[in-house]
Length: 308
Ligand code: BDR
Ligand code: CA
Image 1 (cartoon, rainbow, N blue to C red):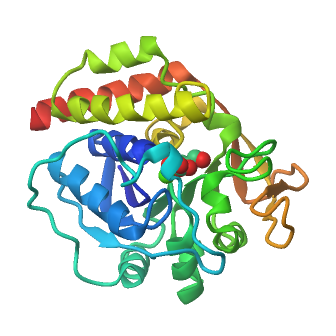
Image 2 (image 1 turned 180 degrees about the vertical axis):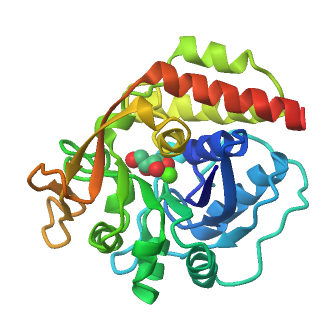
């Protein structure tokens, strides 16, 4: 059983990460934190509450940070749409935001369960950086940190920077230097997990409520990726959950990572140091995509059995 705190900026591929985790009995979600990233906090929170309500997920949903530590806020409306999760239509919902502060939630949950909790961040790393600053001992009490972000080559926002790092480079620098055991899913890996028509058909044929929402969201996402990226969408964020479910599907190298926080042109770039075995960031280089789609398909099947 993998116990996780999941930090999201929902977001189309964030939603798939939630689907994958919610549908897998090997994952126990202790809590979800919605943060600003793809869209402003209000939308990210609304989108996360709507989806978790529809999935009948009983994990608490906290409001995270409403912007990055230092830089001015950037969002990804061109890809994810005006509300950050255009496509699916949700009915009235029961689920409400959890009372309480996300920083206290992180610190309490991790410190009461030393070595048990993995922190999974698939948006900008602002919330985790704030918690690590407030309680540096989190780094050695977390089982591990699993992150989506970065690239060893080109970025996807600028030629140098990937979105999650670009949206809060100073937070990313804090996290990479926290001393925690980190598994990073960069573009080098996630861009291989492409939702092509064959995979769409396979997933859509599972059917059920979760697939209906997924289909509506992917119909929008596919069109915006065709317009802006000229390709089918990559399933970036669910790679973090897939790692926890079936780690053997990924290939890693160990890296020392610094984030460029000074330069204009390369602001937000993940700079890789020497490849040695004692460096704390496990940098995903590749993934067995067949195993990835099997895991996602299985989660949707489980969700269908649970919620129809
Ligand atoms: C990352 O940026 C966001 O738009 C996605 O949700 C993902 O977390 C990919 O660069
Ligand atoms: Ca995201």
